[in-house]
Image (cartoon, one colour):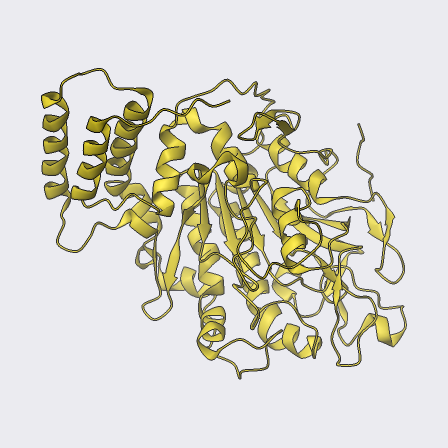
Length: 486
């Protein structure tokens, strides 16, 4: 094993004419207010500001983060302890992989065959023992300002997630979509406040892609025009908006007016983006490819999941988990730099296995994760995209070394494992190690801040690059140290 190397915005009130333009946007049928698409568009057309980005040599063009919400057991997947006592090692057996001497869980046979393309970090750790705060640190690289707690009422997100930060840094590149998330906003009791732009503003929230499990189709919020409103009719309304502008008293727009105009132009661009619409149309994939990623067989009995839930939610989790990764691959092909895939939405059929964790992992959780993750890595490789696409597969924490009285494992952020592939990552590589019970890092501990720094570094962004909150306070894009040994 190798070790890592150490080392005031001015607010401008809209004019009367701009308010007329805003009303025109409603007339256009774009429904821009309060939509995820609206946030995305504002990000793309916001007035530029100096940000002092220090760009390094970019190693990747895109990143897919697969978030196994609930916390997979590292001891029952990628860091098994076969020589530990029975109450630690559990029921599963290790199997050989394509890397000599590297063993993983018997219920990950497909991933075992591609471990020469994969790196493991077995020494991840942080201090948050609850889902909301742990997810926040995992997906933003920083602990929630509220500390380690669960939220029972909606709160405003503070730190931006990685994709939103990248979207902000690339706001002058005029990408159709810089950051996408699918297939929902995950939540515990409320939507977990770590999935959007945070203090950068809702302008940098991801384009939210949703799925209809009945028709097995995907849609990106407002990227579909209202029924009966054709692109030809939209073009006509676009022309009418231009006439309204010409008829106004002044041709000089204020900064707010210029931003609003660019906002509309971006809306038209996205509504007419065949590239993005095509990326979400899985009917263009052959049946063999879709089956390779996997469809789940349907619902499981209520109560078999990690925390209850309802039959419809569990049915979705079983049916479309694999297809989400296929959509992620298609988004990367369409030029989207950052994609978040949330494997489970809420308590129910997720990875929070406090009860009978071996049955849940064996029958519900691991088979489709094994199939879809291996399919994604192999598919990216076959299409020549793996070298420029970083794949990160992780949960918010691991599980307790000792099995509890209900045959499950509880929350354990003190040591867990994440998987990385592609993007120049060394295949068959293990960074760090845990102790003999998988309880604490034994060598080379890694934090979510280090992971964040690694992701930005791989994109060619210096982790010391500063972003600012609304009152001008500076923050590095990541407080950690890149894992340059990977």
